[in-house]
Length: 240
Image 1 (tube, rainbow, N blue to C red):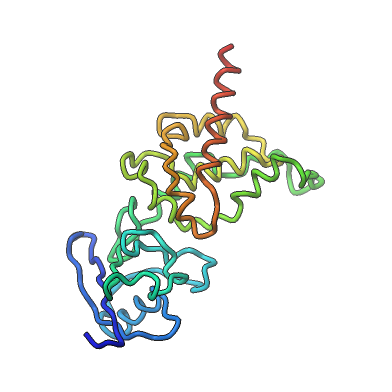
Image 2: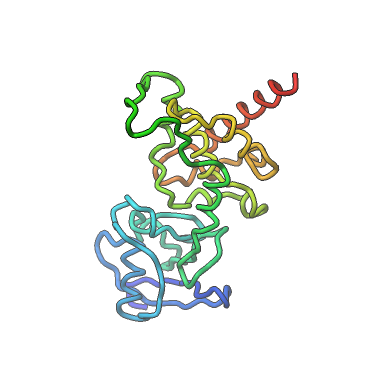
């Protein structure tokens, strides 16, 4: 391998999950992992499948496992992840594989719905806009997770999902917490019922991988802890 290049090991699948191909990729200044994948697809293997869109860390669609760590590849510099001159790429963990580096995101989004991660409104477009107290603790809790872009990095990082595929996962639960604290959302009891089941927030082992690896520096673990408190309060309120 030339001194001005490195190797990229890419898992090909999904039918052959252990099959890997190794490519020699030339080194460029300020090169990202996504740049390396694009070079392979354009110069070595046009059949390689992967996702990307914005290339600037706004969409999250380029997320992959990079040396077994979930990352946005457009914001990850090759120089920071090379391990002995090699980087290993795989599709996101905990999701079905469509092909090569493309994961099926349907289970991830299905869990948003299962966690009631959709707005429960009571007003129509003809009603006046309801005021929101931007200084309230509830608004701060809602704002804390509002920058989630559904990249699924936290979901891929979650060992609870790995052990229990039915677990709702950190992104869906953080979304539920956001809506629970939104003064305009009228589904408080509905949300708490949805996240308190056997595959909900109480399944979280509080290992914190979701918070550790979130590229937007969000804190799903704290959101899940909030859901645990509120579901417990609702339980005792109903059974006292």
